[in-house]
Length: 311
Image (cartoon, rainbow, N blue to C red; front, side, top):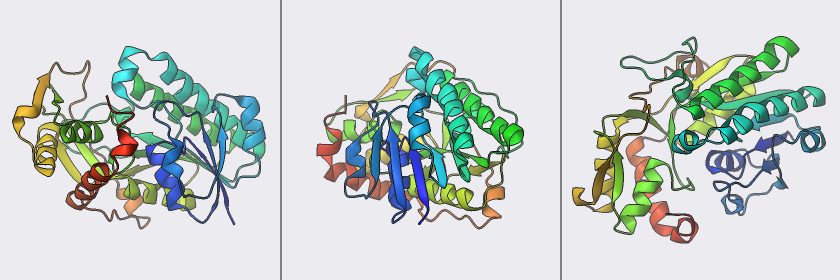
């Protein structure tokens, strides 16, 4: 049986990935920051290691013996990176370097570096393909771009079999309520106002977390060393349009929407061309309407999960 190490595996996307590869032999390495939650892995067979990907000595103990390493470990919230970028650089850049070095030393057969469309900046029209230049506009995006470049350098310089995935905005169960969908849902379910940045015209491409994990699994199987693969969403919406759908799903009105000052350097639009991955057989399976309905139901039924961490 393939042995898989999932860093950041107690987080939102990482825990879904762990669930998606069962019954593989999985080790989860997670620092358990505010967004990491061991409850995300309840009922899922795995070995858990509490630790930091910046800890080279720990990595030297944990990484050997694994066939596949998938790196989800990251600081990921743009607002937090604006307030303080240091931890983002430490984890997303230095942590990635430490992990790549450990994988190289251990002779890991395949590594996947999980990244984001935000490394490209903002695009008014059309969609980025994998050859688009990196032009990050937030400290978070810049740190992720740095980690991606480090990962690619290990493929080019050292021959490490590492591929990079970049994805749009994820949604689904067990997402920490700081991102827009769970933040708005948990606020609306408590009859609290939701903060809509600026004019609400910022556009994002939405993908269900299970479709994202399917794309990562495919790249883990057939991705080429040093190559980037996009995993695009199924629904492109402005934040205003998304807010309307969330209000409707919760049976609430616009009186609970509070327009607030826009985020500094707020990217206007993201859009990925995922033709390369689709050529390998990838197809998303969860339509946004269906996925959102199921996500709303999950948050409504699992207040015990989100109530302790909702603001």
